Amino acid sequence: MADLNGFLLIDKPVGPTSHDVVDLVRRATGLRQVGHAGTLDPFASGLLIVAVGRATKGISQFVGLDKAYEAELKLGATSDTMDRTGQVVPTSFANDVAQRPTPEVVEAALVQFRGPQMQTPPMYSAKKINGQKLYELARQGKTVERAPVAVVVSELVVTEYAWPILKIRCRVSSGTYIRVLAHDIGARLGVGAYLENLRRTAIGNFKVENALPTAQLSLTNVTQRLAQSLDAPSQA
Image (tube, rainbow, N blue to C red):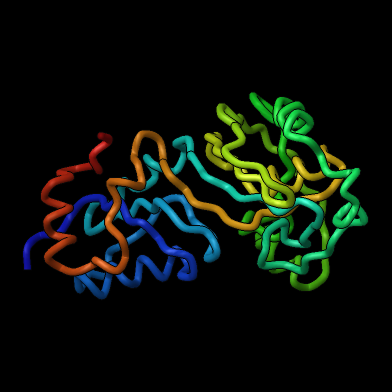
């Protein structure tokens, strides 16, 4: 077997975990030394950077890069996880046509979320406090204090709006939770919202259109991609 070493751009589908994708690469290559940067939730799709072989030692270089997403928000309801995987509860505004925000009101609300800001990590997250993952505490019905984190939303635009679906495109700093952004936008609008769908389109300058779909993972395809990428994925 050739000395497989380098970075892969993978297009993760909805369903598998990021670790599942790592396992798929391991099975395709026969290597155990595989890792990834920037976890995607199972219900989310899009770009995942995977390191193979000795390149796993350099995977941290991608962790702090900005991320770009296409997100679909469902207005008129909230979720305990802030996304569609949780317990969804319609708000009192769900069926009140008069309370539905106009496009102008939506745009005015989004202005408040552009630029530097503080964001509180959600309870349903892998962030650790005192050695325990928050989602493990949340599943026990516990809530703990979380210190707000400084984040930057450098781009936030509406791509489509037809009640109750609001679609946005955004670019954010590393560590930004899009489901928290969705929840906070809903709160700002006064009607509630949760994240219905999420697709990561870029990590830094690396784009999902240059990524290999998991359905095409094979030793031949991985070898070719690694040969093309040399030490890092193409940023074209």
